[in-house]
Length: 618
Image (cartoon, rainbow, N blue to C red; front, side, top):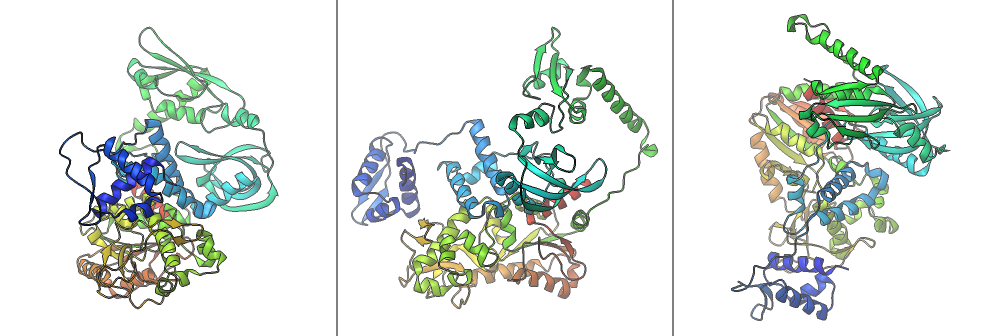
């Protein structure tokens, strides 16, 4: 049931959207009695000065021009800085989680979080644009591995995987008993008991491959022992033997460092000349040395002598490198020993550098990293919609005009839930990378997607540069196709019983013939889909394709089950050689393509971030 504040915002929204609202619509939308509705109106008018009046001529309530009194404003929702950071961090982390871990539970949680952030006066999208959480040193990991790793931690089961040790440039097989997942400095780590080393270790997720979740129970280490071994030193490096570093910062740098927490057990003091003395424990000097060097000549290591000596050696090595002229470099650039995935990402980065236009194509897999289901097979579909699974109703059955005609409450229960879900979903960071790449090119970008979710528009892409070849859930048409019209669904806010997959609120009807309205989406067995909007988009794209001379196509999440996207790209590759096209195909299960395809066997977000990291190296 809605709270009173939620009802106030809903009443305001209905009046803003519809201008005139009959009483029965309010009662149906709010799910309250007439007496409660009258109390709400009285409060809005008397306490908040809402200029709401009943107009008998039109049979409904509407806003009128207020002539006296203070301006009507709903109470705002304000967050402290810590609350904003917590909410946006939660939203960001939820978007990064592999959907297979929590399945359909992720989407409602994201939807609820989006509602909490949407204050009415400040839309959630505006908050996301104006308040940002930047990740500076994150290393992409394989999203498909996160699920089994997290499952092993929570279910106390052993894991087997291959681990790449960077210091030795070699991989080794590991059998571990996971203890906890740690998110540190924008990267994920797995604290675990390593049965191969017979000791506690921290494993970076980006260096883990070939994960196997085992049925064998994990060895459990007490929290105190974990903290003693892994948490007593500095940073991510473990060790029980602790030393104390004494760092003296210049007076200028001290103004910044005095506000920082380097370790929960640190101590500090101000010196008479304005310098700042910081004492911190450490067990392994590697990460501490990196943080000290970050401050250059504004910090001096006073103790212990071993740390001071190690820092002196690093500075000596740096001096040997940079004392030579540019023509007399002492160290040549090392050759990169890249994995097949990273080699493909590097090749993709290189062809992007030479492109004059970018064709962005996407199937259902593109939205997976934003937390959206991809409906792969009946099992995946029924996991997202348990009520349909219980009734053994397949995706091809419910996504059909036949269902709208025979069981409209079920059909709109499914599509209404999807509409609410897509409105609440925030596009993942890969969308923004694509838009940034395209906007830098001579002829810009064009988007061609089989997705109906509107995520490209939500990510800020120009709507005139998008082809939605299967239509859009954000538009409506008459079920009987009586007039050929396609209208926006922005006003339609369905109330859904998610457990039963049925709509509770009033369903939209055609203003011309009174028949039910349906989403303007190409469904299965669909002969009434109105294509005018899609045809217009396609014509714009065909005109755009006459311009490029060095076209790069990036395809993400497009499978062979419904191969619309793949066929388009392969047709361009074989039939439009005047474009000099290059195809980059990012797909975790079906990455192969025609000769010359650059194949990245990974998810969309991970693949795009890998390409970006290679572009930054060039």
